[in-house]
Image (cartoon, rainbow over all chains, first blue to last red; front, side, top):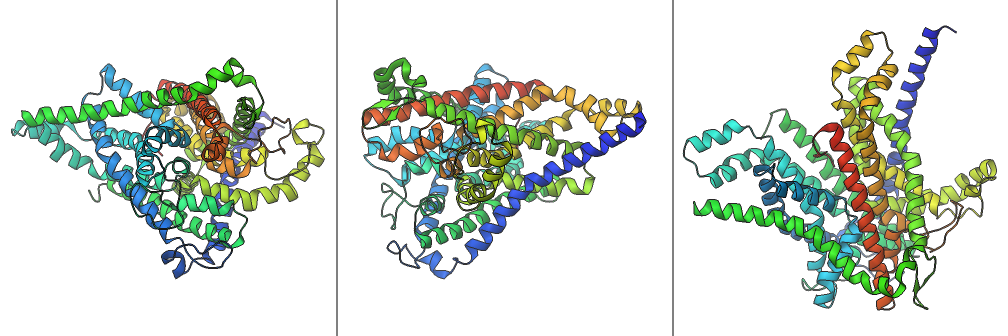
Length: 282
Length: 304
């Protein structure tokens, strides 16, 4: 075999192997999606969305409380983390090179990489114990802590993309510095930040570990902020490891709902961002 | 002027909150875990007892479990991720790149519980019926593949972790490959190299620290992954040479036992595990960040 032929064959082999890697990685995705859809679709009905769970072992009932719970936790978590994340991101974008900024950026990255269960344990120590019980507030705080570093990163990156000429034009026209930041720079970076926000929301909507010892979960409607609250991923976990077939069926349905929400948000926001990058909408 | 100062103070305050959160987490874990560490002392990381009844706690089974499951995940995920990154950045035809990259990103978006759910009802039974018996028959001479095929156990955990970290490693590696200047590739091609040779000579060599960083990041994620692992690993504080055996990781045992911890010492021991986990992921993530910054020049960012 000539050297050239050998090299060409090596090239072909490597190309095929690389392609196979992609296929192999996508096989589980295919299986997971088809299994979730096939096992989940059968349990999805109107009751699922509107009823509370029935006593164990009975067929029927729903997870309305978990759906509302997730919406609540995600909503409050976003409310808590949004100001902190955006203002911290702005701080980093404006004071980028100082030592303090580098420390803050490092902290944000470390917070980002902290396992979500560690964050749950932390919130347990600082909120659940003093409050004397599990609560929706604690759950929201845990989710907010997870969201903050993602928002900080996104905001900083998007603000850095705003051209300096815009800032200088505003300042030259006599606009105060803070107003320039708020109305000009932030507004221009808005769509990118919104994309980052949607991605963060998709991420925390699916988080279970931080809620295990903060929000705890609930079989009924929560009556107050200081009571445990149900959440979709928590419900999926509890039902999946239970020995009751009806609960397991509902776990699959919950998984289908969660996947549609999370993956839908994810894909939609990435598509939205790619469109705005191409300059179509802002 | 007034509003400017207010703005400055608010953004400074927010930045300080971010910094203090990290510090606070470390301090809290230390203070809550301290009782256990003081009582059990230096034996804690090296003892393999875990007996809530007698008050004897050791972290060794969980350190072992965390290391083994993560190592297994890396062994499976790294070659696949490098292949994917190479495919998406160098070898794939243009029309394939965005669809396949999007699909891999969807893999990253799937919540951990759903991986766990799928693991319990599909992966573990499949391993129990088919996968592990085959491995046992063909490679059974290795202690890794001996023992009864439970399905639920270290192997299931490793496989699921691998699936979960492939998107991270491959997307960062792809970014790093794309960051290699084109002149390098063109020079190799001009000398008559095939596509693969170009990639090997021009791209791989320059990307090594960054790829190492990407692998570290995947490792960091695998170390802290909780839900999927706790659902398929069996949560038995045992050390076993076999991948078929159930085990436990630091994250999975915290998830499993925290709400039912029998007494303060038990809870404190779990906090101590949390502290260990926090420190380990801290170090790994810091290392990863440094490696990626060395290659790309800017701390990796933007992506999931």
